[in-house]
Image (tube, rainbow, N blue to C red; front, side):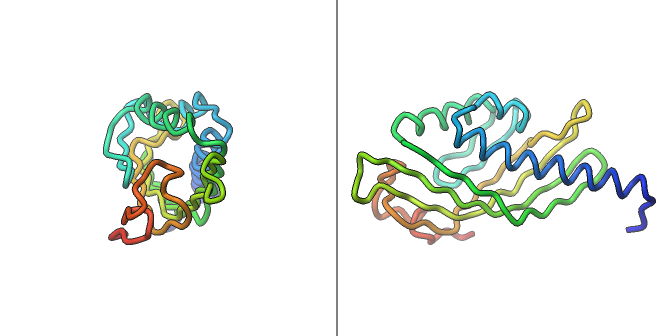
Length: 163
């Protein structure tokens, strides 16, 4: 790819903005500040969340998060190893995620740690990037599936996904 200085700078700015969206998603969930998600996702975004469903609309995602927040005491989402491809006003981002879920009422087995990836499609709208599609794949899990109200024998939690 043969880019001039201005194009290289724009590419770096785009990649940085997209990476920031991934971080904002994690912060919004962990701090229970769901209005921040309006700055991350298109309102009509499509979600394919392994183990949680296939649905469209940011408000549906917020509802799912709020439903889990009623019984979870804490979460910590860590997003890392982002790979971003930008093509004009569209982009794709692939990144790894680990998410810790805490439900103290289930002590002594009150934790569930999950690892997987997000594969996002994005579009630049009115000068800012928004995620228009998110595909979440869980690759492994350890801990108590009941933390997220899942059956103990769930293939989803025990890392038997097709990846």
